[in-house]
Amino acid sequence: MNVPRGANPTVSPTALVEDAVDRLRAAGAGRVEAGLILGSGLSYLAEDVDDPMTVGYDEIPGFPRSTVEGHSGHFVVGTLDTVPVGFAQGRFHLYEGYPPPWLALPVRVFAALGARFLLVTNAAGSLDPDHPPGTLLSITDHINLQFANPLIGRPTDEVTNPFPDMCNAYDAGLREQLTAIALEHEIPLREGVYAGVLGPSYETAAEIGLLRKIGAHAVGMSTVAEVVAAAELELPVVGISLLTNYATGLTAEPLHHDEVTEAAADARPRIEALVRAFIRSAASELRSV
Ligand code: HPA
Image (tube, rainbow, N blue to C red; front, side, top):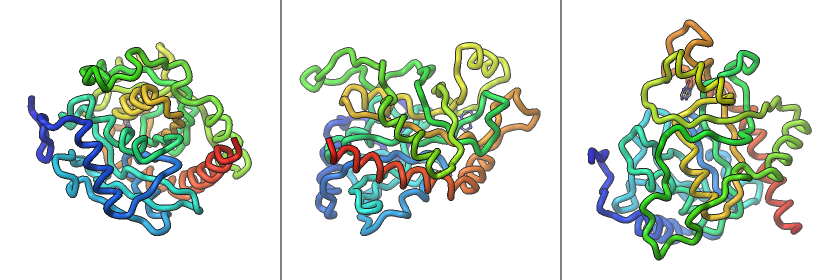
């Protein structure tokens, strides 16, 4: 297998999670209420954290690195408006050459730190002419077109649920809260289905035509594996896509990654306000049950 620099395919994902958690605890990280995985260009969300403890992926022996521009590679643990949270600044993609189980590493690290829910964010292409670039979308469901699953090959003694259910993969209760928060703060938020593709090339117009026919509203190259791992761990998920561009065929413009990072920078005030208010609300809701 062609594995990226910094990755050692002989190390078990379980050992990587244990090492990451040890390293974070040694840096002073305690229990977190929420784990957040930050998508392309959205690393700034971790800058709002108070008393941050930062551990670079490169400080954890054998841990993979983020290799993509716009993705840094750090865990940041601290408090967001007094809620203990962990951020993964930078995630792992199949197109970087990582084996599927490695895509779930940040999810398993947050679960091991005690997270009670997971917020996944990503940059995605829009498949709906009514959802222009800059639209925020609450993910209602996904279609896994990566034809890979992070649970395949799990050591049998670690399998808690051999066939995880995906009927509430994006937790209905958390989604309702997200919608209510967006309304309250007057932040426009759409809903839709995310299609996860392999990448790294963008889609052809014919592929986008197919994705629209099968019910997708957004397309991206991440997220689905993380959400599958969270389902196995019974960790409730809420997902936000920032639609950074019209997908191929909806516009004559060729796609470029710069557009993704620029749209992410433009959306900062809205997405920051939404995420902060949501984390506060979800954490207080959890405390009251
Ligand atoms: N396609 C796939 N992934 C993406 C896109 C897209 O158009 N935009 C941002 N990530």
